[in-house]
Image (cartoon, rainbow, N blue to C red; front, side, top):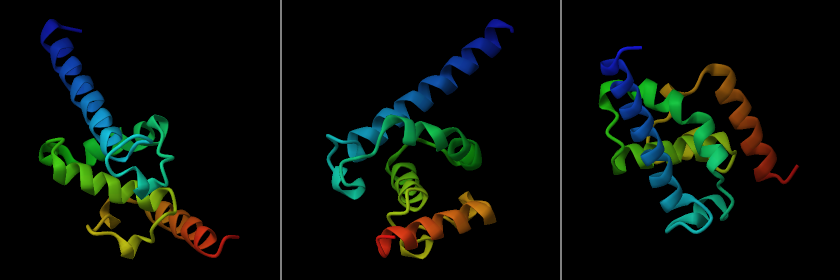
Length: 114
């Protein structure tokens, strides 16, 4: 790996890590809005999906408040807290059909306490 590629790789990792910390500072257990996730959002949950999110956003990813809120909505659906149609932003493009089906089933089971 050339030095140029190594620096680019390090920049991507740095942006990713900063974004993960940013998400957790808002929605993590001690975050400003931790009640969105009942104070239970873990670093692992955030990290499990962040690379896919950043890749999907591509050049539009800035790690700003829009990205934070969009990613929050994705996590709310993935964890079954909200249904896909209950989010503030349209998160459907960030899910495959099978992921959407799984998320909706999880949401229904949480909703009805199954």
